[in-house]
Amino acid sequence: MPLELKQSLRLSQQLVMTPQLQQAIKLLQLNRLELADTINQELEENPLLEISEETTQDAEQAELDAGAEPESEAALRSDDQGTEGQGEDAAGGEEAPESPSEREVEVDGQINEDFDWENYLGEYSSGGSGYESIVREDKDAPAYENMISSPPSLRDHLLEQLSFTELGPIELAVGEIIIESLDADGYLIMGAEELARVAGTDTETAERTLKRIQGFDPTGVAARDLRECLLIQAAELYPDDELVRRIISDHLPDLERRRYQAIAKKLKVDMEEVARALEAIQTLDPRPGQALSSEQAQYITPDIYIYKVDGEFVITLNEDGLPKLRVNNFYREALALGGDAEAKEYVQGKLRSALWLIRSIHQRQRTIYKVTESIVKFQRDFFDKGIAYLKPLVLRDVAEDVGMHESTISRVTTSKYVHTPQGVFELKYFFNSGINRFQGQAMASEAVKERIRRMIAGEDTVKPLSDQAIAEMLEREDIDIARRTVAKYREMLGILPSSRRRQPLKALGKSKG
Image (cartoon, rainbow, N blue to C red):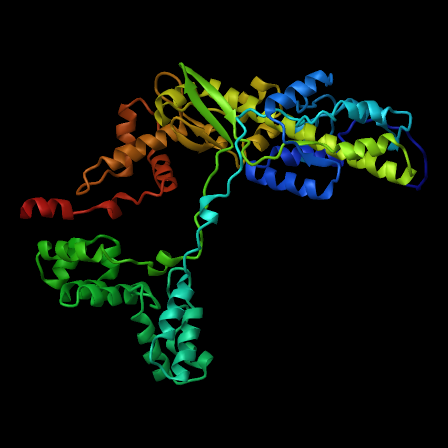
């Protein structure tokens, strides 16, 4: 077949991801803390942006007095009319909020010099925030956890004890290597021979120094495995209890699998003695280093608050710490005076970026509010009565209710937490599949998980419920669920199987009494 060159015309539609649209999508999926960081970064990079000190009511009134047009409710609606494959964002079809100035100023990428920038800036010179605040404005105060000193790490705690220990230079060097080689749980990640090779000394010196370190606080630190860790603690806490040490030393696999009868038979002791030893073993810490872990707890700050007032649910966005933005008046006046063309073009570009950011933040808040409002409508029974009344819900249900695309709902509900009368949950929590019932409507999978958790919490620890028994109990409650599904949900809840939940101590205590 001969090769030839020819010209042809083809008409198609596609969604162009402009930098402004990418920014709007990025803002939509940020949580409150990430949004605050982004705003602070923009404040540093864009001189036209500044923080407004006016109250929310003053900002809204100023915007009304300036004649600002209301935002479009469909700024992030789906664009399903002829868009072709452009990845997830094209499928989502979000349209970022477009101000009138963007359409009039940018024509084929050129700035329209005839546009009345001075008149347009007058609409935003009144100090308005550019987006509405839904909560009361409180003065920012430093977090309490940032005002107190951080706790000492495991490394620092052990090095301090090492400095007060009477050891020679070689032993001190070996001790520092041991401490630097501990993992987060306090276990030594190398053997004595490797330790001696790394420290450049003999195995006997390494072992002797290791024994000294293992006597430091917390008890059990620098052990090389679980058995050694528990034995160190048992020798410290129960020095006269030979049975405890024998169980840990010789029968740890049976102990992990809760084979108490096998332990009693092998040691030729009564079950009462085994039960007494198990009570002592349960006081030992298998992860001694975690008590001084350097990892700080991550606190969740809700992005949305839901309160019940006079029988109705009220939604409030958490805007604490979010600066209220406005356009700097100095640059507005400088632009009105004219001047250098290059400087004017720079200011105009920064102005467009500032206005786009302000409107994008405004639309982000409105979108989060609408999505949360829709979730409350679908899951009202949950907010009234608890997890057991959670209903099956998918992204499409909320997307159709608010008139947006599913990808937009997915971005809105990612990494955002809501404070409700039932506790703090991620917005994604309210979207879950359904479990069929023999009669009536389907039941949310999270509600079934909660039912399983309550069943196990109330079981007899001597004869814990098996997965099959739980499935049969749920079947009697009109829930159609298989045993393997029960096992999957149990594992997701972090609950051990029945063979490892068995606890004979309670029964032995009763019979002994």
